[in-house]
Length: 133
Image (tube, rainbow, N blue to C red; front, side, top):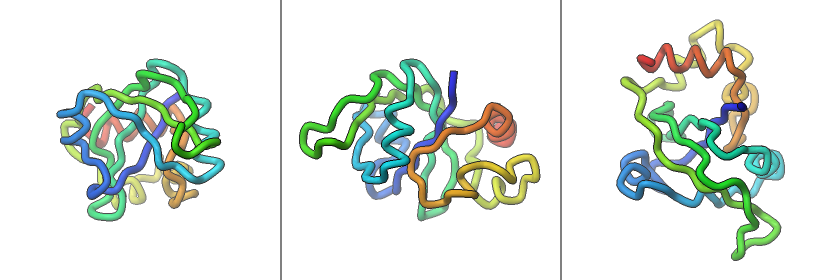
């Protein structure tokens, strides 16, 4: 199974709101590469929830609860549904990710503007380690 990272701005959608909602439709992606990544997601795959812009950090883990479907309001763009799985014991700030040599090749650094990206297994494990498991 693949692993992913999805970004959101705190004013748009927060981790606390996701937890309160229990599940959400993830949309608003208007980048072709990010949309292709969403179309590649499989049911049950795990996704890092990443707060961007203000104090950027990985906050928790979500799971894909419905694979992609066309955004009825904005075809041909797509949506996926995600559910919160668990918060990390501690946030993993972007500064810590950039400072960790084992994460040097992570897409989050290489393609910093991409909002939905795959995460290699080794990078996934390292971020989990930094976040306290």
